[in-house]
Image (cartoon, rainbow, N blue to C red; front, side, top):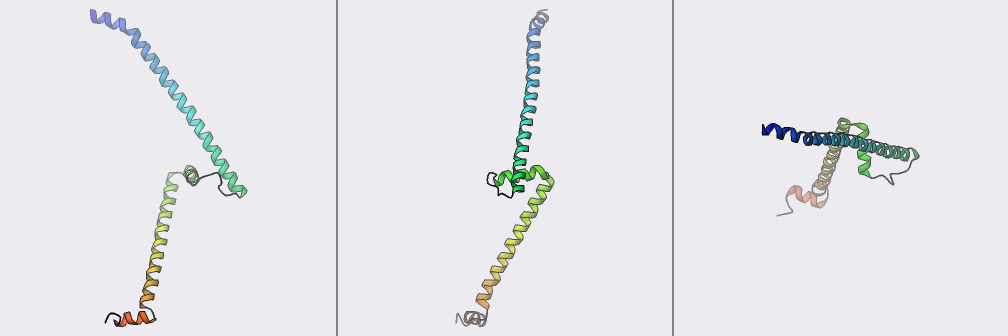
Length: 128
């Protein structure tokens, strides 16, 4: 019997806490939606400023490279952004490979070329 009395005595407090929690959930939800809308409006302003700068022929004076990359990622989407990134990495790697091969061939032609040093290295007379 005491448990029933305690249940009914504590029920208004439980209902009050439940009501406050529901109000807090709705308030947090609407606040997050409002903040998200503000971020979208801000992103739209940044994108429009970038488009205006490109159309006017100006360089990116006020826009950093990170903002530009983020804008491209926002406009192009995740999959296209990752394919572009992969293409840039593969292209940079191929360029580095070709540069290293050109440097190695240049050094090899210096030592094994038609000069005196190259002819001595070819015949082995340099170290005898």
